[in-house]
Length: 134
Image (cartoon, one colour):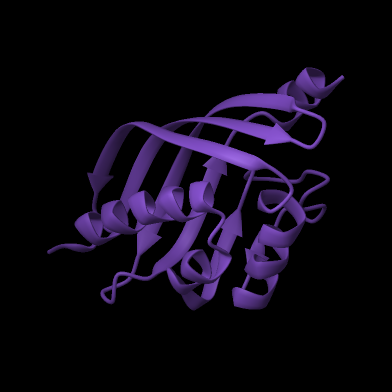
């Protein structure tokens, strides 16, 4: 199995564990020095735009962003290539107070030879999401 197929498998598990709220299983998908950029670039979620690097930072990202809501994570299409897999994703996050945030994005996962995620890059428009929440 090439790394693209490993990235595809890890990406599917990542979405499942997010939906289940299973932080420990989700964190176990990542290499120790992995980087999560969600969204890619500077945002209030990542003011420097360098991503959340290492399992402690990725765990803090979970606590800050993922744990707050009830997430439906639907992979619409997957495109594995090289050592990566790009997924077209529709996500609905139901926040406290029954506030629903709908988001279409592309998430690119890179995996190492052990099938661990070394990079997760989520491409979505932070400003558009902020407008939904107003």
